[in-house]
Image (cartoon, rainbow, N blue to C red; front, top):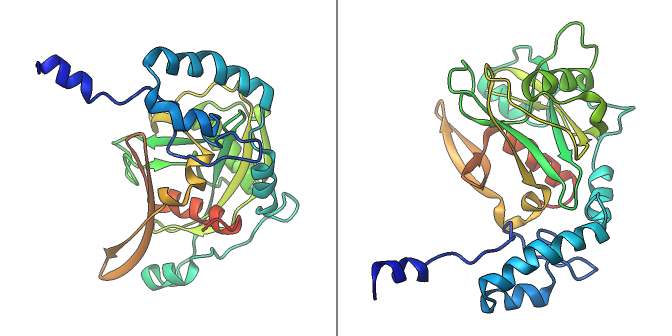
Length: 269
């Protein structure tokens, strides 16, 4: 067998799969919208048949399903949040652990935006921090940062920081609610703001702070197999950690912990 034919034999088949194969009540995969029959026959199809499904059938199916994804999942998410009228208060849900590491020093207020872009597959908007930043350089993060005295509340902070970091027009954001406050090893108490982002929103990284903006389907985080647990040593203390790996991005630290809080509040972890 020639080298060319060997390489061809190992090519991964064309697929819209995002790592989630779970059918909803309509018989569509919550990740890629294929039917169970299409998923089962996928490896038996040739490339032309796969492309036909991906380019002709799935886009039409997305229009039929509607723009907001699985309504049951979105209802479940909304029910898991603190209402906008009663935001959570410090301390964070991990306060006991942070007290062991940081003592009782005052935590500085901060907020992040956990933004879900509208679509058949709602997608979480994430950033990669630039390598030259003093704190958490190169890590995956939600847009957000320290609360300014003029902000007034966590929602204003999250919207302002998202506008500065990724150019998000706040008029295209629909706040849904809050997750529990979370304390970071850098001494902040973060309020996560969960919101919808309009499908047409244009996002671009501010080069001084953000190296990349990318999106991950919410369905990926809801799949139990994609949650990885491990223990790390920090200053002589064992710390239980979680992480997700998607498309070459490692999502860990505070970002993964806030996602874990979302899954726990939804009863998914």
